[in-house]
Image 1 (cartoon, rainbow, N blue to C red):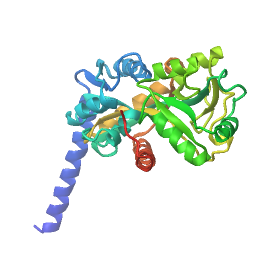
Image 2: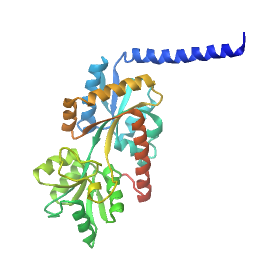
Image 3: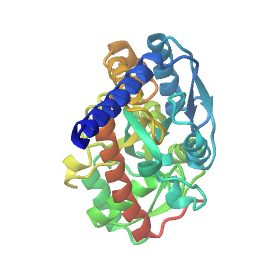
Image 4: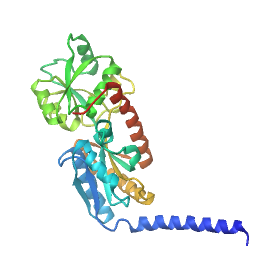
Length: 327
């Protein structure tokens, strides 16, 4: 018997085995509870959205999806746990933007999101919004007016974010370069004290998560000047984007995404991807996520991977060029 027929039969057998194994994994999974690790404390947008999506996944998969909060070091602790977990589909993580960039600030983080995990799907956008205290900056209700005011100052205007190295801090530093104006960052440890002092007038400007700023925008205590996302946000549709106001191409969007350990079975990833897509298409789920201050947004695994890589490259340069450090 010639070698060629044997080789072909062997290759066919191997291919059949691989396909059968993948099909078996998809059929057998899940057979036990799934842990969904959230890298932040309970109550925030990442946690709330994770619980909404987790409950829907539980109903669809027929197994409990148990949310576990593992906060610390901008999500590095949770990411390290998930990186070390078996890639069997029973340990997942809700990635939020701070965790993507944590290795830029915490040298011992020990992971790179773009290389050490399996992307599954995007879940939400968390818009960020620039707000001003109207008693401190009366009449400043657009980005051009804010930039004009900033340029006219002898000493730089102060602005704040939720912390040094936060996504808001990174975004504003990029905006300052593109808009050719200057402001001084005043770092706070968390969004709540930062927005409290912006309302109180200790700092006149903040680049904030929309979920934190929205009640104060609605009450008139703060004025929304611009949103960082490439499109307007449905809950404040009258507020123009930064790109619409003269900074072409500007985009700064904090995201939430579902990831797993590197090396997950593609069949399991595809199953999760499809379930999440169906979940996020439901109007009631979209409204509940909106109630948490986020916007439901699906993105398949391959596109998510490209998006994470592009964001990491873009913002890494900002961090390096500005010499930014976390507190």
